[in-house]
Image (cartoon, rainbow, N blue to C red; front, top):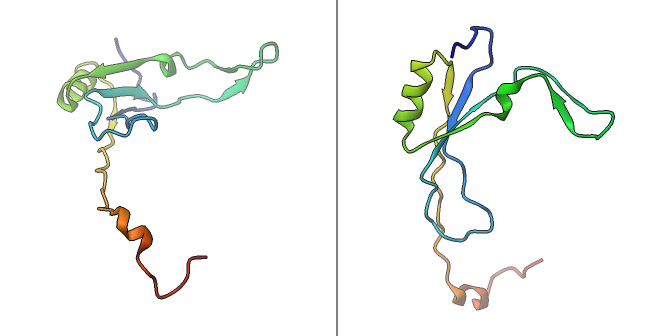
Length: 106
């Protein structure tokens, strides 16, 4: 598989956890997806989004970031690594809801 040099680079990232999940476990997989290389347009018959870029349908999952990078380099794919953002946890106390404040809440 050879990717032309004028092709859009792939993006390697760790996806965020689902908004419906309250746990702190991060997703284990790293994902390699191609950036859009061409324009998209609505299909006149169905209204779906159409494109001539078939690489947009490819999503590869890897256990580690190093495996994803090794795959991209082995296949000559230009890539960009997006580092995951760390979650900041602010300690909260239920008692803080009832503490008197100097200024009233709006």
